[in-house]
Image (cartoon, rainbow, N blue to C red; front, side, top):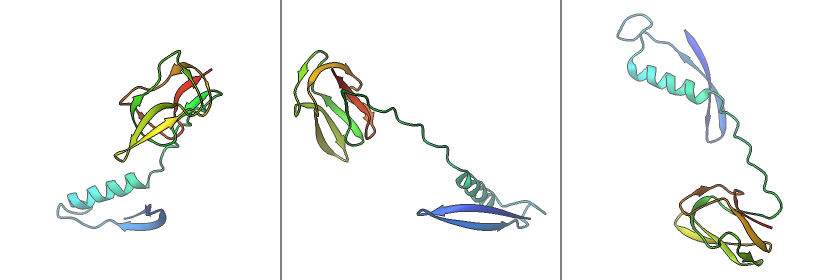
Length: 128
């Protein structure tokens, strides 16, 4: 029996045909190593679920410029912030990056805390 699979290696898709062989356990029995490889290939060939859409930042939202771990939130609720003030510090790949406000206003919401993981574009806080 032959089974067809599509696998990807470094972004290049390949169509492969795998032929069932007679294993030690008799006709149609696969050795455990072949069966596990076959299951892994089948799992890898399954299409990935689409990523959930990221919420769009609104007016006044300050967003993460890179993915990483929040090291510190350098403002408090109600604090007045000017453009260029440091608002959050994010660590990525053992490097700390200071995030500075793009606008000015009063901090009306803080969406992260120290230790949180953030993706690029994640809302950090909101100014009004």
